[in-house]
Image (cartoon, rainbow over all chains, first blue to last red; front, side, top):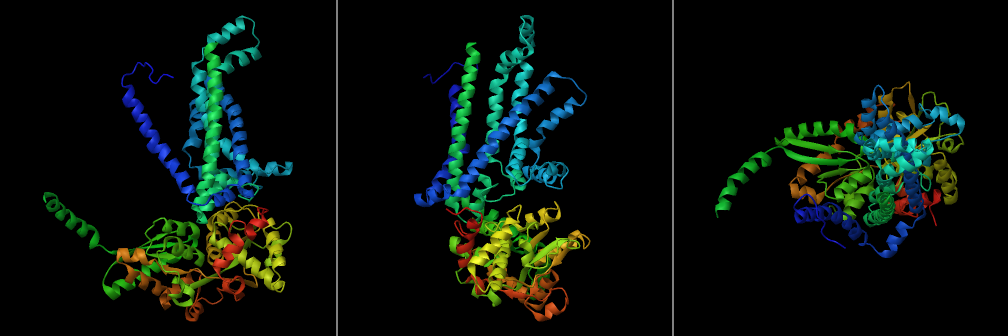
Amino acid sequence: MHFKRPSVLPGFWPAFSYTALYLTLVVLIPLSAVFLKAVTSSWEHLWRVISAPNVVASYRLSFAGSLVAGLISVLVGFLVAWVLVRYEFPGKALADALVDLPFALPTAVAGIALTSLYTENGWVGRYLTPLGIKVAFTPLGVVVALTFIGLPFVVRSVQPVLADADRELEEAAASLGATRRQIFWRVILPIVRPALFTGFALALARGLGEYGSVIFISGNLPMKTEITPLLIVSKLEQYDYAGATAIAAVMLIASFALLLGVNALQRRTRRFLETD
Amino acid sequence: MKHTLRTIPALMLASALFGAGPIKLLNVSYDPTRELYQEINAAFAKQWKAKTGADVVISQSHGGSGKQARSVIDGLQADVVTLGLAYDIDSIAEHARLLPANWQTRLPNNSTPYTSTIVFLVRKGNPKHIKDWEDLVRPGVSVITPNPKTSGGARWSYLAAWGYALKKNNGDDKKAEDFVARLYKNVPVLDSGARGSTTTFAQRGIGDVLLSWENEAFLALNELGKDKVEVITPALSILAEPPVAVVDKVAAKHGTTEVAKAYLEFLYSEEGQEIGARNYYRARSAQALAKFPNRFPVLQLFTVDELFGGWQKAQKRHFEDGGVFDRIYGVGR
């Protein structure tokens, strides 16, 4: 284990200390406060709160919803990035700017707009209802909101990598007789895979913590469409601070494990790329 | 020594800037009282100026009743609280000990200068023929009401429905629970607060009927127009008593105890009562009510104390984790 690595920039120790200090002040201390607050209550109470049926149902919805939305974001996000990098078309600069809009919009606005669109008599919902598809006030609505929020993360992660990718590699592959499919799977995808993982991890993390845009479209029905962050807020409104922080702690640990997993996957693919 | 000499002018400047200014009062209230307290504050400031010669500036803070109580517990400097239900002020007394537990006995009528009730807001022409509580559990009727776990108004609505079923079934608790469960089967979305539900119903066009505070229903009626919605008053409902209290410790710290008390007493004065009635609250004073004939339909009203043994009991049995509301949604274990 090397502690110090040579770098072109001087000042390893100041930089390292600042990183450690920053992570401690801004990330670790507030997060440990969560755990400290949680343990002010008895273990029995905490266990009862975090294992209550409606809370467990909310973990399921929050994690499954974020995973599905993350996957959709990866597929669609890659496509959007591809179009923005590889094609020239009128209004491209506008489309490029539009991608970032979900970052800037207050999430509640997004939630209200999506709800209006997808309710039974909304612009989109009225065409889906006869088909038997209900979006607003169902888990599907949660996925829609989280995809809206997650998409820019994937696009913005993949776009620069795709722009930097050497097109000569593709031409070389083609001249060596590779089919289009082979070029995609064996040349392009390995290059963008780490970026896709990054985008996925960001979208997933954001989805797990998302509150504003989801609570409007989800309907918040117990056991069916309550997301975990809503239950945290709901516990606070019932003055159950310890219970709220206990759920938050579960959320934190699970999210951290999930993100570690995604990062490990990403490292593996990068190593694969480097040894190639 | 040098330091103290230097701080003295600074202190004098500070007291000139802040001390001699008008008296400041913060009224932390719940959602639908915005318009009411705007009018009250102006009238009270005028009266206080005439009486004492001092200026008083009253700031208002609004939000869901429970959320507002939590802010006060967490340190929001409220001189007075005017919340949606007694339980929330009880919580401030219990968790932060900012006022004594018997606060509700300090002013007349359980410290509630005005009352309200729960009524129905329906679409123009009442296409689903919703006249009374029984119509809310019919299949195909979509009911909008917020989550009683987070909304004070929703707790009143829930208890109103329960009380109706209790009275109808000669006090049979099982039947009341069944009725309320059927009602919530017709609820497609649970917003976290009363204003959220009004928006869902009014702006997004969701649902056939909104369970609402009477005053909020009238505000929505004025806002949306009589060609869009109607107010339906059921034959029986709950007497909603949103209470008021001085937050002793905060007021003492600010030196505003006297003016805070006078402010709340003003609510009980004829002028205050009339402002309340004008803002669609049922004033306690018959004289004030008489100035707005035909505004408040007569209906049979029951109180939380009568049917539920007070807020503490109602809260524990119905809305706490593992309570009846959880059971209705299958959260029980």
